[in-house]
Length: 601
Image (cartoon, rainbow, N blue to C red; front, side, top):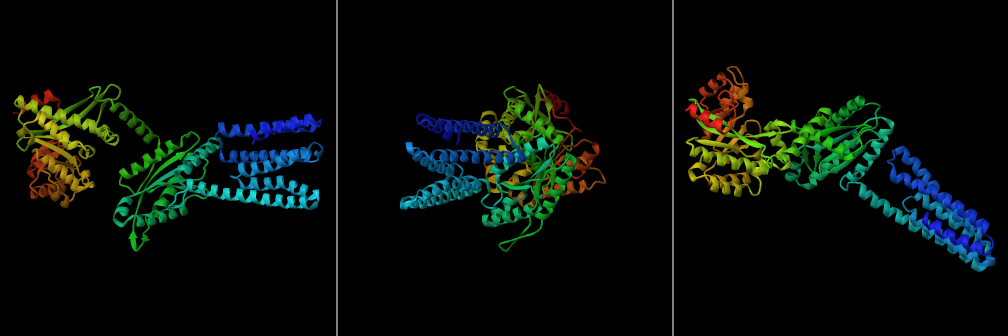
């Protein structure tokens, strides 16, 4: 608008100067420059500042005023020059008025409140001028001016409707009609600016449905879509008035609450709202003759003036939501400072772990496995990480992070290769063990090149007889994947003579049907059962049940975490096969294990 006014305006000044009527044009042009400068300031404010909702409303009023004044200026120049027919300047005035109307109808299309009155104000004087010209030509031109005005308004309205429709599609989810992720990010950025200025607080709820994929896979996507629509309707009824509900994608929804005076009140309201939403979502659904029940996990992130990154807020809520899932689902977790520190620590671990292999920071320890007579019959390979900055990092911390980031593939290969080389060297030194256990993560197990890696390393380090000593330990979580695929991978590896052990047995997906299908040779009783084991504990019943079941399936049983003589006696009386734990020995480095083996012998 500024460019289309400032430069053509110079033509009026030049023409008026040539015909001795320059004073009116010069005054008008200075007014154009002044309004242009005002418009530039409005433009600069929007481009350089983050505006709150209240500021945006004021900014819009200023912008509307700018457009109205600009259009009035072109009406003024029309009125000033329309009477200058002596020099034919009235033709230029007529053409300019029509051009200004066209420009207004095109540039102001996004806002119906601007283009409609502007076009009418610009074209009406032209129609009146033609009418007062008199004669049939004047009347015809007046009618044409009215028709042209209607055409401009009709074209602008059509474009406006198309723009609104396109904007709606860009900002709304097609399935549920809710706002989508794109709109939500912009909304959240604006809200954070508002909260920074008001020093108030709000909250964000990230809602993820539990086991929705099971419904989609078993009943079909049509049922899943209808369920999502019903879920969105229920959440919409529960959200704060004036708050926002958006669908981020899949079965993830996000709710933003209204503003509160302080953080403690906001936290209380957020948790209460999350509980109401959970209660609502857990009520039964009737979808296409199916009675469905579903729960959700909700992560809560508090928004205050300190926040300035929308994606970070979503990430915080996402972390809290996955924490809720890890704790059994159907729950609410609020992201807090303690969780923030844990996340930052985990991020540091993730970054340093990336260089752990290159810096030779990963080593292996070996924990002896003994029989009921106290004889060493095997060992379990355990990874250890000692970092210059972090010190000694527990496997319970770095292994899950390695799984999440994918670095477990390289780490797992290193562990397997080092373990195979160790077993080969032990044999050369006369260290004769019956079994040698190596932990294999689920992600490593399903890695496309895992089977080839095992075959390659076996051929490089182990003889045909030595391979029979190797035991791959997998966790029960592996059963949550495609069981047929699990069996195929196990059978390929068992063709080498390698055996399989089910680690942490009894804590996850234990099932007799899976026990029957999976080609495993051993189960390990989880240390959580062993640690509480005494003459009066209910865990003793659990352990006896596991031992009985294992004997039924002809499986060897290893008890891990044995720390007292009492635990050892109870397990031995129940005919457990192998034992490992601090009662016998801590995990040992290579040379210490060799010494322990020789002393034990």
